Image (cartoon, rainbow, N blue to C red; front, side, top):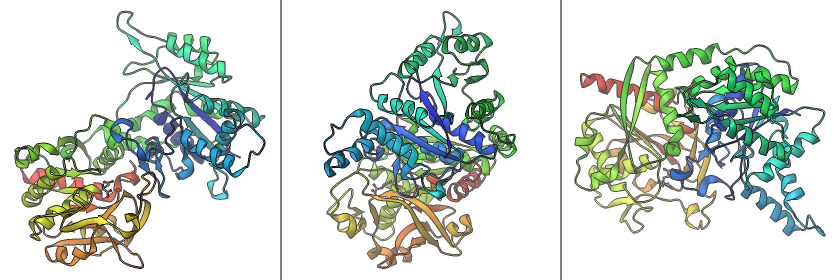
Length: 543
Ligand code: GLN
């Protein structure tokens, strides 16, 4: 059985528990331990797949096709933990399982209640994370979403309190992440909200072992450290200051400098060799000293929520470091191209153009115009999922002469459905978890840009979409110079995975989501080569 670390949050939501959990995972791995990671979300959706990413943030997809919380993206980028359907539990999925058991009669004669039935199911999920022999881990890090004091998260907190008792004498470690607000008039960081939050936690029966304090761009002083330690009944060395640092990849180094990993290991009574963080340190230094900058336009719907395309933003930071540059990603509203603004006017000074994932008709025609401009002006282009579909629509209309070509998602009656539903998707009525999801193999064609980027014959990338390239049009596209450099082999017919345009400096679009597998130490090949092409484009303009 692994040792367990539970991470809770206090004072405000979005306090940074996900990064704290991922950073601790990274530090424990640097000390030779294997980690497993679990996120528990106290909302009633069975998974976040049906939520609006503009409100809730990106939906992260695992190899086994689970639609999960974006914190799993942090886990993926910081650690080697195996992520699957088991790595994200929601209130909805817990209730779903309990209600199904009740209907099957598994609780016959009993009144089914939050305690013990819901809390038992939560504990089962925690144990299931490492139940299979291949899940072997030394430490399981479990992050509880939400804020202590919320009604929603209570069953989860009660469950981890019971869990701690059940595994005795093996110790668990409780880490509470809080915020210290800065009060201008007093000129200091305030500890009172943290004290109250810890009191709420102790009311439930959980005494934190470590308190991780977010302090904005200020650092935690000795006075505040002493005060929090005393009021919250925690030793001073276990009060960790978590200052905002850029890039986020520097955060584990800061936590390590304050001895966080050792404090956690002491609580867990585990021995481990000293941390080897050399490679990580070099990476952070390279990120902090970029030689150049490229500007990439992300053409899409207006996005107010920074986290809606989290993995794409991060994949660009990894691709930047692989090319010794920073990538400045600027969001460009595609609807303006439908209202008289010319794409050239807005896009001409960019070094590359991205059209990313998306759903629904709004802004699509503007994106098609953006593709026409970048194709004709030979700007580097990366299309992801919807971005690939848009590229096909544009080429069908302007190179194949199929003026009304479209995706049946936007125009169900189009005479030229170059993007359409596979037969297996046609009868689908439920929206939750029914898209083409998760990892699929993709065979690459030698001599293509995709093949050069990966240096492999066969790759595996993750999907999240319903519509596909329509093979009935394939030969016509190929004649016009659109090469299908990656395909998923199936018994009946191949599915197009990557399309690239011959004779263009860099025009590559994938039906899969390359961003989900990018990590800082291993930039995703399509992102990496796109950024390289953007650097070349910048030079060619004499910039
Ligand atoms: N809306 C498109 C589809 O469902 C693309 C989805 C996406 O970009 N993730 O196929």
